Amino acid sequence: MSGLITMTARAEEALKERMAMNESAIGIRLSVTNTGCSGHAYKMEHVIEESPEDERFEQGGAVLFVPKKHLLFVMGTEIDFNDDHFASTFVFNNPNAEGTCGCGESFNIKPSG
Image (cartoon, rainbow, N blue to C red; front, side):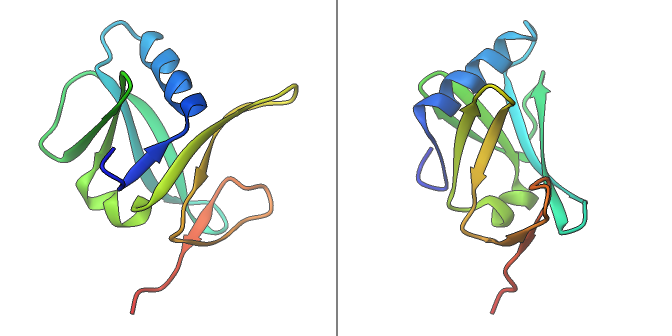
């Protein structure tokens, strides 16, 4: 994924499984929303049609779209997937995140400059 965003093998497989859940999907969009007690949260949704507003990343059959306006929030992020007895979830190892809230659902970004 050109180093901008990378995925572990577990995340790659989980992303392909999510894509397969919707037969019309051509990939998954990763966006950043303004929410939560820390300010930002990740949102993933199926993509049915490619948009010029998105940057497309492919790795081993997994296709990820990121809105161009959100690239600065996720630059350098490694996406992993954790599947244990309690939860199955994507894990974002984001070097731009300065901190997260107590529940881990939201994050804040290091100030630039």
